[in-house]
Image (cartoon, rainbow, N blue to C red; front, side, top):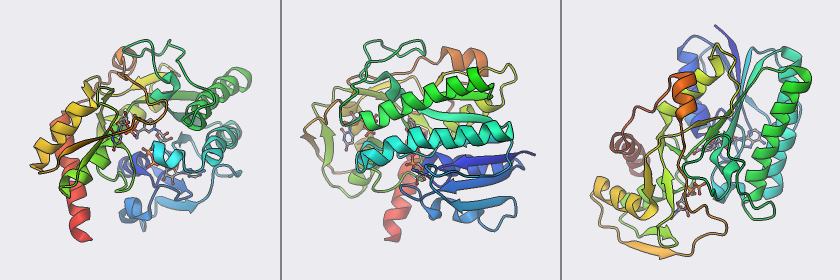
Length: 313
Ligand code: NAD
Ligand code: UDP
């Protein structure tokens, strides 16, 4: 049994992680400012005496005694992280300073939820962890990309200078139940549009690619990385290495939902990466991790979830 702090614990990935680690018998502190997260995601855990929910913003200091920290706090959808870009970069940069300070004081292991966005619009394909990336430092995505890159720098410097025990995980597109209905990312947008028989909005010509990992696989990878006994600090890519064009992905969602929706094309947002696919050889060899959930199975569970929410409204 460990005392575990999960920042961003009421968000999509965070809420799955809270549930899994609580079920395994740990004491969980779930810290969230509810910007994109929701109490609904963790309502079923409230009342468990090993679960504590704290409304707090990681740009402010926080004190607790814990053994492990998963730092997930940060809006992840482009729509949400671009809503208040200054706050987004502060969450990554000021936030990681506070959380690393806490880790240092408690001698806790800290895992940072980094992102494939540190590779920007990558010129190396698939992306390996030794690739330094191709990031626009002054574009509309940089509040997120550069914030996450700076957070990785802080992690490495606290590790080298102060011997803080760190883990850096670069998460690739992850999907599943508990994504917010208005999240704005491609999986939730397409499923909700398809279920409502509304037009499916493909940005650009749909030839850009992504690879989609189901949330339970991702959570397993995060936990393996946190607890790996070789002291492997990463960075490590976690994602499902099956590449789809966004246009093919739209067609797949229409097929799985039996929808009458039509595909329409909208302008491609600025700096939208053209291709993205993880190389997961490090995760396979060092963590013995591979994703298990097939895309059709994962999508059906996600479709059921959104269908349930839409029917409640
Ligand atoms: P999410 O938006 O659902 O969750 C983020 C959570 O952090 C929310 O509950 C939000 O309220 C909280 N939060 C935001 N700013 C905060 C602050 N200043 N203080 C406290 N809490 C704050 O997103 P998610 O998909 O669950 O992503 C979780 C983490 O994983 C993020 O750090 C994200 O960058 C990273 N990530 C996710 C993906 C993905 O595909 N889901 C891909 C790469 C990286
Ligand atoms: N996208 C799209 N239609 C939508 C939402 C997203 O075509 O309604 C595209 C987006 O332009 C990008 C890809 O889908 O090329 C993935 O977008 P998402 O916002 O999910 O995350 P990203 O991987 O860009 O961070």
